[in-house]
Image (cartoon, rainbow, N blue to C red):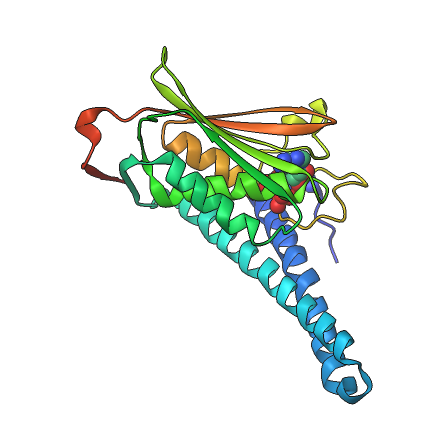
Length: 251
Ligand code: ADP
């Protein structure tokens, strides 16, 4: 069989092969685990204690959630890339969106503490509220996932009067990101490999989606990190009074 040298494969083919290989790996790991634990439950049900049965069922549930997240992220990436994603812009209450996102994540991380600080009389921002929700959930989920139990995740929402913008920041007390890795974290499928991150599940799509959606809606994203924790900030223009009650649909 002829060995095709890497230099002969054009860039697109290589990107597609990388993509298929990464996705297959991401799908295979949870699927193998689901099949293994389902098999054990089927063949050894009577020999297992109720605690073991519950433990195995919880693993099956966790791994299924991991698959659902991966497929949802892949669908988002595919929609973003085809540029066919409909964005419904309307004046959106960032505080309400942040409260909702915190509520959702709080249910998954029982020992973390969540603090939400905000300026009074915050202006609304002109964004697609579902996409803003997705961005906030990604950032708050990462802040929780990459920090130890019993630490605090702080969400701050403040108005920048000079620039007429609003900044939402998500701060954690977690493992931090090395300065040489910061440039990579927003790339598609990019995960930082270290003894600290290896045990934490993910598919490297969350921040790519977060940055792409933020910028698509005219916003900016930045990150500051130290070994004591990280802080991600997203900034959007404040909505004007004319924006209130308006609905703009763009592809
Ligand atoms: P993942 O699914 O791996 O979490 P993301 O795209 O959301 O993918 O993040 C990319 C990488 O950036 C992660 O694998 C992790 O190494 C790093 N990262 C993201 N958020 C944080 C955070 N709050 N603290 C430390 N590292 C983070």
